[in-house]
Image (cartoon, rainbow, N blue to C red; front, side, top):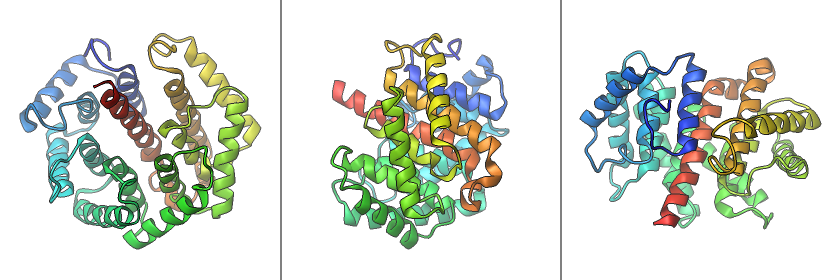
Length: 309
């Protein structure tokens, strides 16, 4: 991946590499350059597809069978998502890639419609909390088969229950609520699973920061696993990554490395234990881990870059 681009955020490079591995594709520098040209031909210099998100979109284009059809679909969905919005940002563009990558072409218009409806409902309840960074998670809920009313109601119910924890910011709570709503398990069981896993990882000194990165632990809610064993494996992967080039504290960052460590363990558990997962989550099991890590890392990068500027 470094042969394709020399200047890029470490987390973005890791994401691109992860996408190729999950797709069973080797990184082809020449093909990546061709895909980059395709993107540039569809997106102007000031497009939201040409910023921090550009390398990720190029990687997504590179692993599909028909790159041009994929990017055309993304642009079409993006136009529908941003309709009526004055200043759409990168996170809306990312939501478009999430939908196209995980939804058949004939269903995309309906998914976009329901995603916008659900967003509007959540925005009405939390006007200063809900923003475009929630769009991809909302799209995942819709693609999991939930209607706007159900998606908004379940997410809001979990949010109200969790917001009592004053150690976690409200925007993180809302994201966790959206991911937890993907599971069919009882609410209390999902909540206990999330908090128990995070606290156990924290006590073992392998937890992420209490920001958007910690949302990854909510994705374990639908996997039947032993808490102590899970924490032990996450710790082993975290320690191993720490010794790998590009994963040290000065390159990737401790919290982001632990986000990747948890995602690797989660993906392996879903592969091994897919039969035990709920039917709803099984429908998007391939998508949710990769997309969730992408969403979280992009949010973290967007926030950090805005702070720097």
